[in-house]
Length: 210
Image 1 (cartoon, one colour):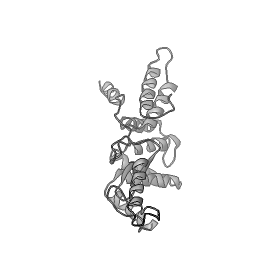
Image 2 (image 1 turned 30 degrees about the vertical axis):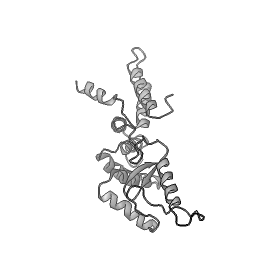
Image 3 (image 1 turned 90 degrees about the vertical axis):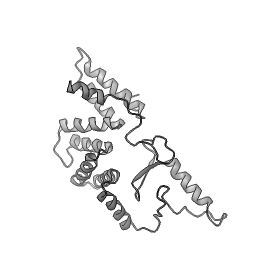
Image 4 (image 1 turned 60 degrees about the horizontal axis):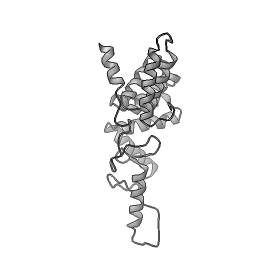
């Protein structure tokens, strides 16, 4: 019965991806077109970021001098032009201390890019503990590749499933691949599960299942 309940939860079709909606226009955030606001830890779409830039340009006192927009946050109105890279880093660490999973996940991405896989694992784990589906997916990748941790297929699948339940389409696609590779072609049970995963992944915007 527990397995049935788990599958019921696993194969539910999420309304949106793990990114949710843009807090300004309330439209689903695109998988590849989004902006992270360091000051308040929000994700907004490129369209709203562009609209904010245009609004600030139009509000310029000199209509003939189209100087660059002052990079002001459209959510909290904090101006980021006055901050140095060190101060922006301090901003990010403040968000992390406030237990902001978006900031934690971004810090994990930053450490991963530097090759600091142990540091990435630390921040991904903190974000995942707070329910961040992107962090769960990143942990699955670490366990798959053995970066900063020992390779562990069971833990990889565990985090893929949690990411998929949270609406992560790439995790959903990977689970479909796992089911397909492990299919028993005498009854096709795993193949059916793979197709379910891929259908949900495609509905969330991932082109690969198509």
